[in-house]
Length: 289
Image (cartoon, rainbow, N blue to C red; front, side, top):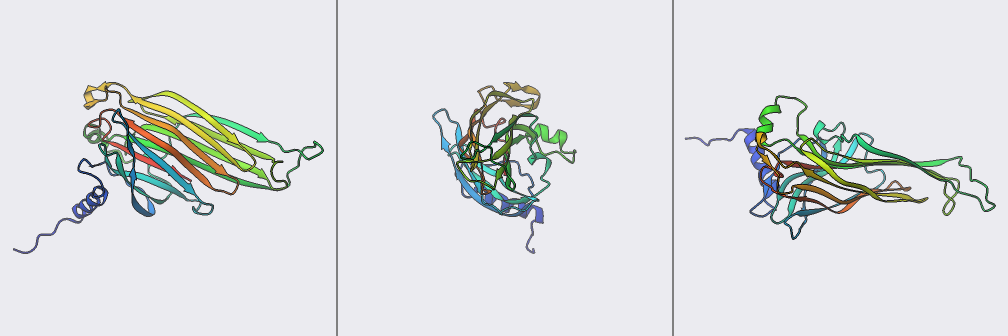
């Protein structure tokens, strides 16, 4: 008999499976695969921390230098595999083109919007006038979708836009205008910022807080802290998260500098509670521009 060839799509899936899991331990599982329009990407291993209650805490450390992205690009990280025992994950990260798939777009409707102005003064106490300015802006979010549970998937896969329910999201958008006529300590700086969270009817919000806001003539920093928990059980969909499933952001630190540097950092986003039929179908996106 001649050599039997695998269909191309099966070969691709098997290669993905090997690439996504071969760096993890025996308990590694694939999360539902979603398309992302990467221009270029690499696979990275993100080592988290296992907490005494069994939760996994994964750090976030993204920093974008000025000029890294074009207007139609974002920096994206998407979870491809996770080991819930060793608390390790494989992320595909790189530069992706807009528009992003529906599942990867922010959906937060619960935004807090603020405007902040730091008006500089001259040495004689008069107000500094700005004839030229530097403008910078940044937006980013961490987003989980959940909808590839087999029961849900069979129901909605016929919808062309479908790629999962929103489970949890933290979003922030910052823009700043600095006067170029004077330098510190006499700034003339105008900020606008929005931040908030979103979640689906399977999840609910607990203890949202913006517990740190710092603005100066060189940068603005914002912390957003929130916890999203599941409703106890949905027997129809075979989802039982009654043992306290939660996604906790501890907190997310957004930073925009006058130089154009942008960053998202966090000691960790925690996922806790039952993994099977509760957390195993979560797809995590980290998007920044």
